[in-house]
Amino acid sequence: MRQSPASPATFDRAAQPAWSARLGALLRRSWSLVTLNRKVMLGSGIVGFFILVAIFGPLFVTQDPLKYTYDLVAPPSPAHLLGTNQGGQDVFSQLVVGTRSSLGWSFVAGLIVMAISVTIGLVSGYFGGFIDDVFSVITNVFLVIPSLPLAIVAVQYFNRSTFTVALVVALTNWPWGARVLRAQTLSMRSREFITAAKASGERTWRIIFFEIFPNQISIVAASFITTTIQVLLAVAGLEFLGFGDQATISWGIMLNSAYTGSALFQGAWWWFAPPGICIALLGSGLALLNFGIDEIADPRLRLKARRAPRGKAATA
Image (tube, rainbow, N blue to C red; front, side):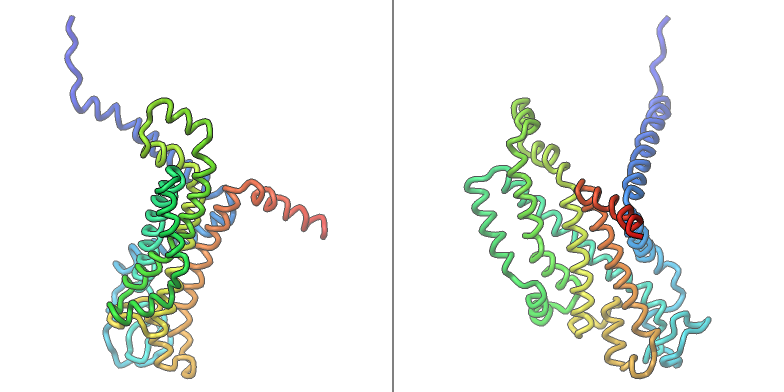
């Protein structure tokens, strides 16, 4: 008896368990990596909170952060949870809306640095020879370029925007990660699994990005987080000094507004303290993530972290 062909719906129902199983396995693995180290767990919680605020926070803000009112430098109240500034603008609304700008540009710059450093570091270390010499010269040139003074010059002559600062910091910070990745790739390209991949006829780009790159994820993650911290502090610092776009809302612009409005002398702590605390918390969360990833990737640091509580207990 001839069987009727299976319908597309049958295939969809058969494929759904496989996809759900893969998704479940991915979520379980991600959760195990987050909870593997206390620093990673705490840092992930802090950074995750700010990411949620940046994505969904502006959707729940009921007051226009740029709207001027007659409540000048008003302390926190039910109408204004974090008070107002010298223009009567709601500080809480500015803090929530500014999270998206401050965090978003930092992540964008981190992704740019990660892409450039991974490409140049892996390609330079794998091929060597003339290609390595050319990339090494380019890397050494960018290493000596100071990022902060160049960012000040760029915002003065080109455009006073957060994009300009983030782009300059990103283009001057990729050489550090590229050099580390190049050194690791030089030591890995002669290992047995790379030789086996070449003998099996794998293409060069697959060897670089599917054989070598997965073994250097911890270095790439550390480079991304470090660049994110640098961009966050550089952008906030330049905006505080008055080199930012005053038409936008960010934590650095809020600090600049509090400085020019003499918030400290007026005792208006609610004006300058919240953005400063947010910058410190986000930087601390990213730093904890960086330290935790180093401990997970380096067995010596992991062993040292495990022995530390025992040593303290024995001393006590």
